[in-house]
Image 1 (tube, rainbow, N blue to C red):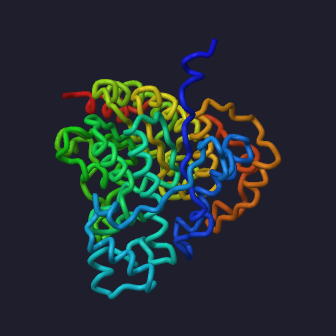
Image 2: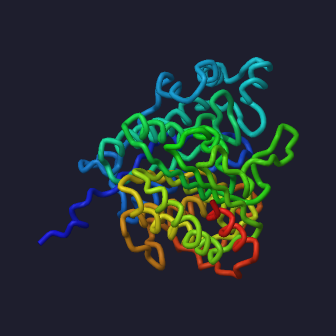
Length: 388
């Protein structure tokens, strides 16, 4: 007899080849292959069909149109990003106005097409989930800093906001957004500040983001920042370890999700909280992120998992491939097969940490666990976010 679990549709993976050939350029933190590494690893491990997949597990991402982007973004800003791609430049006044070509948001050859493709994936996911699908994964998505009228924090558009809007437009009334990126999910929180249908929760490094134009950290994302009431923020200290994330999930995050009883859950699974990442001072293993995915995937009838930050090509590619394994219940091998190892050995990273990569970055998918003490700050965070 076939079990109910066996009848449940498989999760679907939304990807695109645009990320293989596109880069932010120069020595930008996103001048590394991330999505393509994840896709190649999943295929090398036999977890993901080719683009010609007849079962529809792999979906080639559409590109969001200007009209679709305008569901959240200012048309004048959308036009400026399109013009920046066409001309590979913008007048100085528009660079300042739209924060393009400055502050880590470079003008590069695919500056419109690349983020519009990530948005196309998230919009498609939101619409598909609203229509009854169970789970979708878009590692290219997760650009949670994007603002309606300007770029912010390497994010030109805000695809998680567009995914949530697609869910709401499809008739859903309770959407939970969980963000485990090392940086505060400020753009998504602000997008739904006054919308009781959306609950946003961000676990992020304390005093890491956002920053003002002078580089000073601003107050958003603090423990007492609850936006319009439907938000919680868990700013964690440097050295945040696996034990502490496990504790916060059990003591605070899972009860909040269960109490909200969401019809859909959007998980932004940035990989920059891992110990090897150069843009945070947190100390998680990728296994801690995979446990988050495992814990939340049954808490709502619809689930969208996105990528996000992650600036070490080995750690982010391995982490995101493991997210796909977790969604599907695939067993992660102790030692990678030759084809997967070849994917990782072919990577290059000009950062100082990439000069002599440890052998484990080539031969394993799972990091060694990184447990540690539960510090007093973590207990205080759990108590504060659970308080009315």
